[in-house]
Image 1: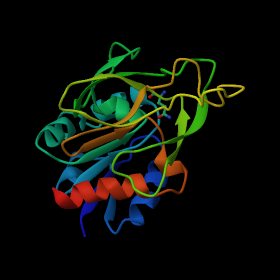
Image 2 (image 1 turned 90 degrees about the horizontal axis):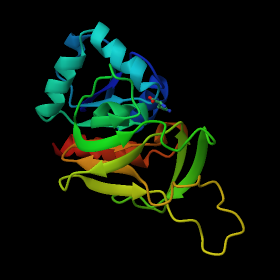
Image 3 (image 1 turned 45 degrees about the horizontal axis):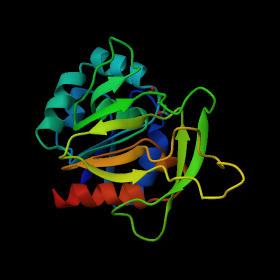
Image 4 (image 1 turned 135 degrees about the vertical axis):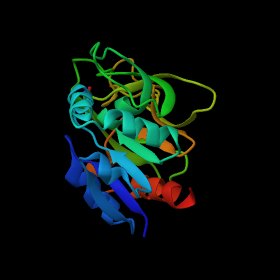
Length: 210
Ligand code: GLN
């Protein structure tokens, strides 16, 4: 069985671990640099990217983890994890560090103050069996990607003629919320919270293939 780490400094570690356990992998919480050894993949949970960044520095994991990902370690980040994986962040803190696993620019807290969270069904390239129900919590969006990055999901346009825009916040339609570059995957939303294991399954397939 492949060994998949969950960065366990901060955020919804337990939910990711539970989702991964359903995918026939061994799950290892990662807090120390030695725990990176022998990993076949790593998950960066949702939480608070500025805090996660600070803790990665404190635990001396920032550079080693960045180097592993640059060296091909498959990684999956949800929400704050997506922010960590970006090459560049907008509306971040000036001292916030990036793991630079995906050649993209991510905007933190992008969906605006008026909505702390919303939910939406998304078509997700590479995930079979119908739309993925996506929960966004003070979520980022992907502002732009380089041509090497595959866009897997966007927030849909509201139904034409719908009385209201439903749960989709103003300005959100068409925004990129799931991407992949080589064996690094990121979503602005939290599949670990919905009991739908298909995104974790996609990630563990990437881990097995690499
Ligand atoms: N807003 C958070 C951040 O900037 C991310 C929120 C989340 O992970 N649910 O890191």
